[in-house]
Image 1 (cartoon, rainbow, N blue to C red):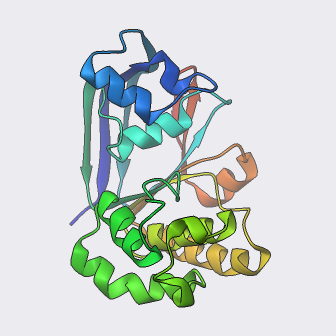
Image 2 (image 1 turned 90 degrees about the horizontal axis):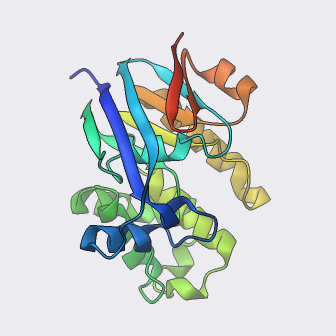
Length: 231
């Protein structure tokens, strides 16, 4: 199998409040689908590019340029309003490692809740569950409710779930640089392994030096439009 990403004339409109500071994000997106939100803003317009097996693509642009939104389109979270996205290969995104958790479910149950939402199979998660708990340093808290964890522990759990399985296509929003000091070194190694092991990687970052070091292609976005794609 050869992995690829092909994006054909993709545009995306979202409810205004989804990307307005203080907006409710996914809640407003759900409302828009029900017809209760009518004001739409174009956040991506006329995006075209193709990524081949072996490519590492850096996505650059100022805040609000559409970098994270493009990654969400690529991972299927935001279906494009117009155009087509075609991919071959398993996809995994590191956009919000704590998205999809349930406060009153146990730590172990949240592995399956978030993992399933990410598209992982139950069998994969059952095999990986012990390693996820140990990597997150939460093996002794598997039956604790999520609400009993600190924000740092939640971050470790979310990261451990998100990186438990090697994907063909890895989508990343910035490189991990925060977290518990004792966890960061192991997390950086895990992230590097997943990045190197992917067939395709797409990373959005403000760090030009990082993208030059890790990527062979670049996308430059400006106000939702692609101004450059190439080597």
